[in-house]
Amino acid sequence: MTHLFINIKELIQVREASVKKVSGKEMNILPTIKNAFLIIKNGLIFDFGKMSNLEEYSFDKKTDCTGKMILPAWCDSHTHIVYAGNREQEFVDRINGLSYEEIANNGGGILNSTEKIKATSEENLYNESAKRLEEVIALGTGAIEIKSGYGLTVSSELKMLRVIKKLKENYDIPIKATFLGAHAIPTEFKNNKQEYLNLIIDEMLPEIAKENLADFIDIFCEVGYFTVDDTDKILTAGKKYGLTPKTHVNQFNSIGGIDISIKHKALTVDHLEVLSDYDLEALKVSETMPVALPSCSYFLSIPYAPVRKLIDNGLAIALASDYNPGSSPSGNMNFVVATACIKMKMTPNEAINAATINGAHAMNLNEEMGSITKGKLANFFITKEIPSYNVIPYNFGNNQIQSVYIKGKKV
Ligand code: NIG
Ligand code: FE
Image (tube, rainbow, N blue to C red; front, top):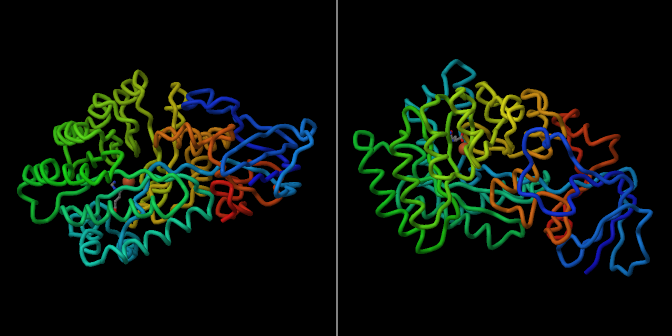
């Protein structure tokens, strides 16, 4: 099946050859072709170029995109979309003056979601999560990472990861699974964290590996959650089973999470709302990529990751939604891109690079996602008629997407 798209006002993020990631000043360069065509064949990008270079071509379907632009689908490299119920009461509690930390200390937060996971069947958890996945696909997300971490028992963590596996099987977008058993210390292990770490290492990990349920391993390295030493242990254990680290670090405190993640060759370090000069210097000489989560900062009213400083120091940044019930109950990558521009002072070019090519790298998906490149998956969206792609962040909160294509099929 061949589908030809013609008269595309601007085809965004075109790369002749696949690049791993864009860093520093390069992040402000977004390659595009004005007045372009795009040919999709059997779910993949087959060809593209200027309309003036379009040769006689036989095709099954033709779509005229006059006035509209095409972008590669967003790559959302950090989400927790498998969860049960909601936590809107905590949202109201925060409006009334409680902090995220105080809510967590009163048994709310992650442990609130843990109770809900326990009480929900795998089937219902799947149905709730699939709905969220479909919602974000309609908003332009064409590849996603999903974490466990609201189970915190062997059976509940497996339940979450099996749901992710089923989503992988039933949906056409690339999905990566991350095991986040070390997300919080369950109440029953409150006074014996070591025993919980042993449970993760000795019981959860072997079972997860046996069923091949995870691609990455994650930990929440933070005061009141897990220490640098715990992070060292968990990442070491994960590596034995071939799981690449991606970590939650520096959300509220800089306690050495970046250093230990780099030591373990983490693919990404995520959050970074609090960043010391030492952390910055460590990142500058590593391959580990920072991932910023602006909707989390927006929703919790906490500082934004200093991405301007990171980019100006030559680093690559990816943007992700952190879609979860506690700190970012939205998976709208258009909003993430807008907030990155408005609040973090990223340029639209930088933000689009961060949410496409660098987002793909943050999931090890560069060969198939992140840019308009021949041979990559035909996961992209067509905008409404817009004057320039800058209006995607400019008209924040408005939907500029007219249609989304996954593996060449309109959804
Ligand atoms: O990425 N920081 C830790 N984990 C999630 C929030 C989890 C929750 O509140 O449910 C995050 O923000
Ligand atoms: Fe998160």
